Amino acid sequence: MPAPNPAASDAATPDPSEAPPGRVVLDSRDISRALTRISHEILERNKGSQDLVLLGIPTRGVHLARRIAANISRVEGADVPVGSVDVTMYRDDLRMRPARTLLPTEIPSGGIDGKVVVLVDDVLYSGRTIRAALDALNDIGRPQAVRLAVLVDRGHRELPIRADFVGKNLPTSLAEKVAVRLEEHDGEDGVSIR
Amino acid sequence: MKKHLLSAADLSRDDAELILTTAEELRSLADRPIKKLPALRGRTIVNLFFEDSTRTRISFEAAAKRLSADVINFSAKGSSLSKGESLKDTALTLEAMGADAVVVRHWASGAPHLLANAGWSRSSVINAGDGTHEHPTQALLDAFTMWRHLGDLDGRRVAIVGDVLHSRVARSNALLLQTLGAEVTLVAPPTLLPYGVDTWGVSTSYDLDAVLPKSDVVMMLRVQRERMNASYFPTVREYSRRYGLDGRRMASLQDHTIVMHPGPMIRGMEITADVADSDRSVIVEQVTNGVAVRMAVLYLLLGGSEPAVGGAAHELSGGEE
Image 1 (cartoon, chains in turn yellow, blue):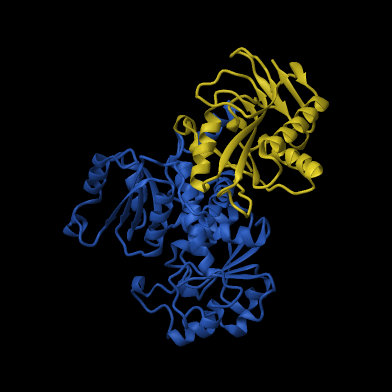
Image 2: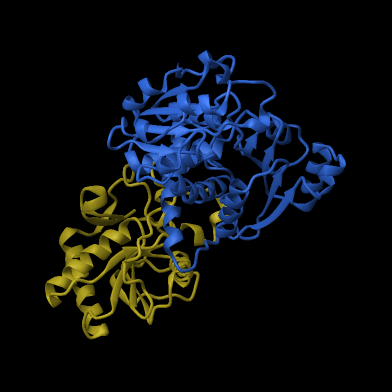
């Protein structure tokens, strides 16, 4: 079976199997602390976990969304619906490359109408992935509000988009690459820059 | 580089599995309030049907529309095709209209190949059934239906029963299912097995009762009397007694075995009503899956800058990763 195309997350995550480690900017414990803080910030902003829906952007955003949901259920004692939203068909560069493998879209059974949707992704870069995700949500339902949580904001926005919850602001040059590795997908946690 | 889908034999195992996994993602669209994706916005797909077809044309039309493509239906009846226009002139007309893809159903075997390879147009050509030759998207939707029910098709036994001689569905299925690792047995009276079937790499049998208990999938074919120019069997009654699937024969199947039919079916001939309406029958589901599979094919052929299945695209995208 062909490997899913990893280019789905803003070209910010190069092929993990070949990438040299580079400079580590977040280790496993840093990631865990950042996600704990984000989880609390989401709850604070939402005044609890009611009506929350976490939607990760595949692949790594989904794992992050699940971790945040686990944190929230530990703090609040209530389960938050988690799903995923694949933005492949909504990308503005769809026509510029060979057709890409679709990734799972799983909307929790309660839907997103009237809910507070928190989009979760690993790296925020140009903002084009998030624009595509907002378009995708438009075809799925009408949330009461949409917020954005990212593990790393590396700047260089090309669209008027900002994150509500940021794990770490990471000033980068355009030549640098940010690689996010997560236990569930890559066997270990870490964010590195090279 | 292949940009057409003309034969199930054009698909490598990776291609076929990519289509199936893509179809699986697209199938969930049917459960959403807005059944629409933007992938083919601004692309024009022409359904060019020289032969009557309800479900295939509607299925392709639904698939294209759900991907936001513009669809033009062009059927032989009531158009200049019935006035004697040649395939070449039709192709030039479609090219002039700016069709990105042509879905073609033709009574002559090989017509889609001619359309794709004669240099008349730059469109992608998708074979929606040509004569008694091939019907690759039907084979893909059949494989998809089996895959959803049985998982991996490696080593699964599929019996294809009935009028194999006139069946493009049987040929495409035999090719594709072998690519996916399944073992295919064609069951038909000797008169309804095509010449050269021994080169297909499948087993054949004249005895339905011997094959049924070993099968994981039983696919019944319609007897295509409109294509029959001679007597291939004595009477309908004798045919259905020897090669029809009835309740008694269904009882000899394994518990997990599914019954399929590409449609349209003739109840009482190759399949009885109680079998067609039973829990084992996935015939209605095949129609639902057809839309998802055709969406996957259209997306993978037309969605990007070049096709993702069937050739150079693999090397190219592999290099990028």
